Length: 245
Image 1: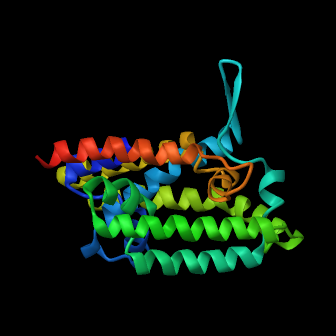
Image 2: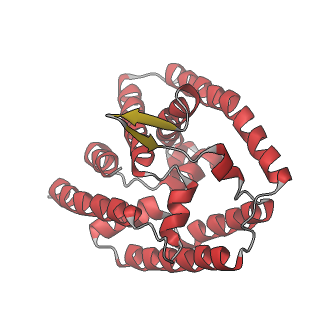
């Protein structure tokens, strides 16, 4: 993820804020960089999607099994429609209020010593830790429901055609607006998205249990994502400052 965001800054002078890219794509405004943002989102989705549907939830290397996604049983046991709705609304409101998410503020903003990003990150972590820990202790919206499980199965079912549509539109945009400059920017941003998506996979950020384990304070606290973020910030701090010289 650090490599992707540093490459993005080096090639086009842009910070890699994923929530901002989603906003630009959903709004469909060409003046906000719709096409390069679309290429990034397309690249971001490619490797996680292909791995999930072509290989599965895990991979074995050198005799060791590495989980990329949670098992269906683990995932469905915690799916709750109420949590989906409340969490989605809060995340959407929070990213708009903070003008960014963890990708922009943590990996990019902190690396540039932004006071706003430091503040946003602290608030992200405090709110996330409190919510996850209380939800775990009080079991608030923590148990899976049959309806939510069925909705999860439906979501997996429609993910394949949605991805095909995403790629189809991506190819259409590339052909329709092809120029040498457009193609370079489009393909380079797609590559940045690919690298970022690969980073999400190997870091454990595609696993709900990994994220919850990091945010839930207790005897089973999982600190590994802390090293992921610290490693990304350190690498980006060095790279960003070299790039900006």
